[in-house]
Image (cartoon, rainbow, N blue to C red; front, side, top):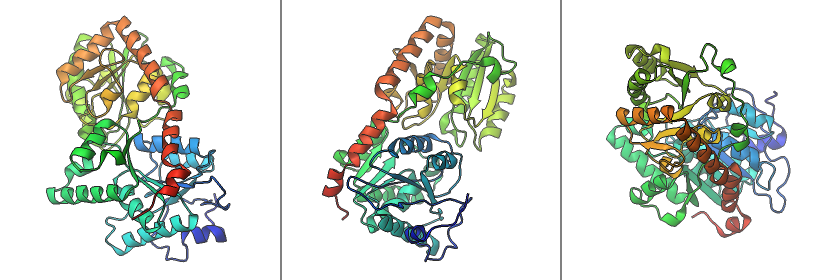
Length: 425
C-alpha cells in the first residue's frame, strides 16, 4: 500500500508542519474527505488509543463499518496505528490516521500532536469528534475544542482503570481532575452502563443530562450462526468433556483470573472432565500459567491466546465464565449469550444490566472462589438449567443488544439539528 499523499490529503493532514513526530508503524493511504461536504453530510472522526482487538476497539470498528454507508462518513484516528483492526477498517475503505501518543501533552511533541489534530479537524471540516479511551480523550477533546468542532463526545467505558490504580495518589488525583475538565468541554459523555454513569455523577459531579448511556452491541448473526466443531477446534478433547470458556485479556488482575484458578480447584475435583478454555492474551499470561501449574491443573486448562474465531470457540463450549473484579459492560458476556452459551459472571459494573440472575444467567460476588465454583457446578450438573439460561440469554441479546440499536442511538447524537444548535465555549 502506498503511503504517498495527494496534494489535498497533504493539506488536510498538515504535512507542511515538521513530520518528525509522526512515525506510523506501517504505511497508510490517508484517503481523508476527498469530496466536498454535501447537504446532510456530517463527517465523524473516531479517536482511540490503538486498534488492537479489545472491547472498546471492537465496538468502535463495528460501529464505523455500519456508519460508513450513512450520512456520517467515518475516519478513524488512533494514537498508535497498530493492531489487526487497522486492516479490517482499511479493507472497508475507512481511513486510519495516526496521532502518536506522547508521554505528556505538556511537551513540544505533545503540543505538536494536539495542534496537528486540530488542524486536521478544521481542514477536514469534521462535524463530530467521538473520543474513546483516556488518552484519546486527553488529546481529542482539546483539539476538537480548538478546531471548534460542533459536536464533541468523550467516552468512559470502565469503572476501574488498571493504569489509574497503579498511579501514585497525586498523579491519580491529577488524572481524575483532567478527566472531569475534558468531560465538561464535551457536548456529551457516552458511557456503556448506568453504573459508569452513576460514578461520573456522584464522584465527578457531572450533570446527568450531559451523560448518555448507550449499551454495547453484539454481532448477532456472526455469533448465533457459528458452527459447533469441537474436534476441529479442540483436538484431543473428548466429547464428554465439559468446556468452560473464559474470554478476557490478561493485561491486569482486574479480570479475576486468580479467583477463577482458585475456583477451578474445586470444580475439577467435583467434575474431572471440566476443562477451562482461556481465550485472550497479555502480560499476566506467564504468571497465570505458573499459578495453574502450582495448583496442579495443567491438564484442566488450555491457554489459547488471542483468537479471531471466538464465535466458533464459544459455540463449542458448555459454559462461559467472566470472574472480573470490575467491568463497564463486557463484550465477552454479550458474545457468549449471543452464541447461545449459558453464562456465569460476577455482579460488578454493568453486568447486572445484562444478566438477570437465575433468568438468563447466574451472578456471583467478585473475588469469591467458593461462590464462583458453586455457580459453575450448578450449571454443569443441570442440563435443563443450562439450556434455559442459554435460550433466555440469546433472546435478550436479540431484543436489546443489536448493533442496529447502537448505531441508531449514536445517530441521534450526531444529528444536524444537534450540530446546528451546539457550540464550543
